[in-house]
Amino acid sequence: MLIEFDHRESDSPYIERIWRSRSRQGGFFLSMAEGSIELVFTRLPEFSAATLRGPVSKGALIECPPNGEWLAVRFRLGTYLPQIPTATLIDHQNMDLPLLSHGRFWLSGRGWEIPSYDNAENFVARLAHAGVIARSHAIDAAIEGDSDRMCRRSVQRHFRHVTGMTFSSYQQIERARHAAALLTGGSSVLDATFDAGYFDQAHLTRSVKHLIGTTPARLARERPQLSFSYKEKGA
Image (tube, rainbow, N blue to C red; front, top):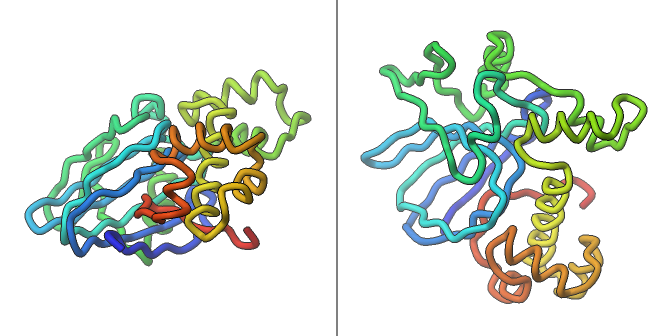
């Protein structure tokens, strides 16, 4: 594997996952479409960075440098930064945050200590307390299909404002990522088509090629290196 990943769940209402990775050698990987915001800390032999990443609407081939280490907080869908519109971060319009001395970085007018893999929840709790991040319950209503809590049009409007994308786009991304996991996990193209809920193989191919960055046949045959993903319990 070009990149080794490790991840864990979180009980924070703001965090979906904490993940970390490292690369032993340089090369290319498929960066899949993604619906979440991430705060990523990069460490290379001669370079470090703190980066706020937004959702990505299209898969692409990305070069990975050798001897790198990454730590990331993947925020739960519905978590957003009130001072930074999510739409301004979409499709690799990442925000590089200034690094300070003594393992700190600058965000929303103040310095923060770079978290570790084990204490990320405490770090995010401080962000929430300071108003740097917030949660929108309209996103939960959209995902759960709870029409009693908000009217459909209001849910759609809030969803796009908070996440920078439509609910339909988010669903398509999640379906394609699920299909990619099935294909790289050993499922046939035919099985993945129906297990992921596509109409037919042509529908699967169009979606996966656009959102993952390659064809279903190649995923099943070659099992290429993908950006961070994980299998849900029971999936």
